[in-house]
Image (cartoon, rainbow, N blue to C red; front, side, top):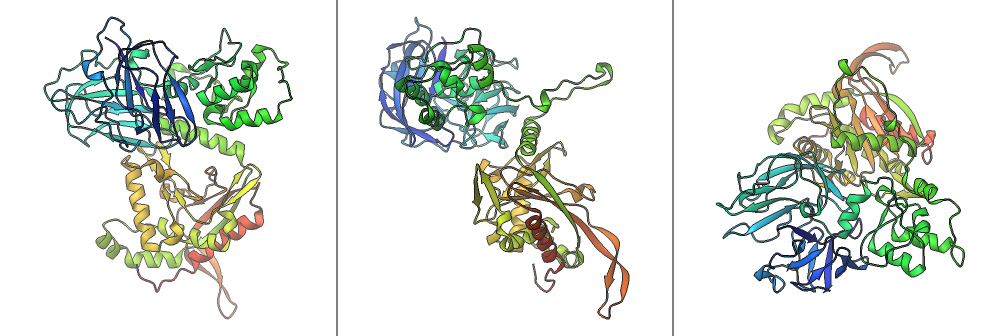
Length: 569
């Protein structure tokens, strides 16, 4: 017997839940792939959802009128036409609550494993814009006992690496997706059964074949999967499919049910649809993209002058990236090391930042005498009281926040031709993780509302959770300016790349005793030894000129050099 699980699809990056309006099929009905199974409603759109496979409706788990989270199991399809339908599937399950657990958690298909019940673990949604995740490591194997909330696996997304807890106590009966595999949000990855449950023979370390029977998706999630595996289309479709299934265009792009329905209603040919530049994730065409195209479209439509081959290449092929360039090397004397997920994401973000922002750099030196004396005076008592060391990072963040109050136009972002001025200050701090092989930037939210002790506590908390993979998606989002402390590695000075969509990042080097010239009150110059730190500011010259960048950096230096040593911490 082979079953395909249907889950509540994600109908947009900000959609977290959906309501089942109507089931078009009942238990026992035959269903064809791409035939409409149900209608759902979200806070964005109502949509008809097609079947991901042909077969028989074996179970309707969520009844009409129920709102469930994205990724929640809603139905099962039996693809073996000769198999019997489960007797318990004659009516929708009454045990489904109107709201499921938060989408960032593993979603069980039933109550905690007991009495022979089975709990399905799916790839959790670790943020509104997250469409897929990669399984880094299984902490359990098939047959192992597991307690509720015990770590089962580690996953990686384009936002954060996380340890995922078990949704129930029991025994791991099946591990479906092997380590190193990237799957869509909502994909079935493992099953947990009651103690004594039979362990599936198929749960081996071998990679799972990418068949529909092994995948746990509905149309929208399958859409996400396939759009990230774009290949050249040998036989392009000529028109928009009027049915409920996903549509492959000449460029092998896929379109959501909403985009497809608009195209059908407006009479857009597939060539026209393929010619629209998408602004969504991985150049996906959104509703707004289609509406913008229609607003500029001549009456009666327009037929693209380019051939199908040309249309496909312009729509699907992104600009060649630096990483696409092939280099020669001595294979016998070289070792190939695959980038981990965070490193790949960092590489892409850094390249995109250089392509986006006109980077300009300013640099200054800062006399850290007052801060050093203050820290030396209180660091022992502080560590004894708080349980962690007093570092220089909180002093730097405090000075950055104070300087933003004087120069708020450094605390902005760019949205097209619009400047977005942030009336709050969220400071990102670069943290080296995984034995200094990766970098992540957790964010101190509302740092402008904190005193120095509060910043110390927030800094320590985020750094610890970053290194132990306990960060939540919201911990690395919505930063307005970033600090990177290169001095902890002995670096004297550096010029960091802007963390998009911010417009400025400050980099600081090591604090080192240096000879400097000072002028006494009576006008005499003399050479003295001072703890000096070099600081740099990288800023986006599209919206920040040299005057503003330099003034902001000098104001940060002023707050550090004139630090109030009479305060307590």
